[in-house]
Image (cartoon, rainbow, N blue to C red; front, side, top):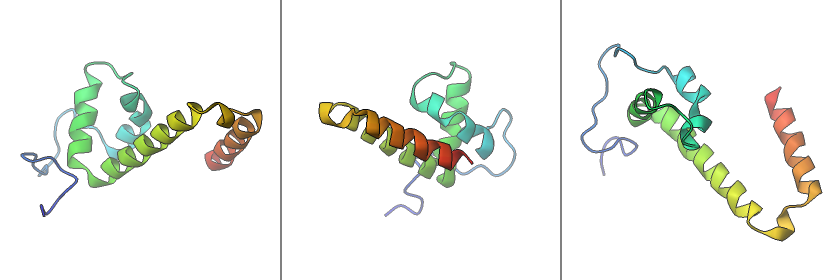
Length: 98
């Protein structure tokens, strides 16, 4: 097993500040835009580089991707698209925001 399974082969840990590097806070702030393919062509490689070298942000990426996949899967079923479910999700999101 590789010592850092979250990193791709050939990627190296950064040893100091990297020009134009994203911080963890900046990366997490644009994570959904990254997942939705909505980042501009200049930001996308910078976010990807950060995700390739940061285990913590990569874990967030995996969690959010699985969450979005589950939402898409649930939305594909007619019986799940109920008003009650929508209201429960909104309530949970509001609670988590504070």
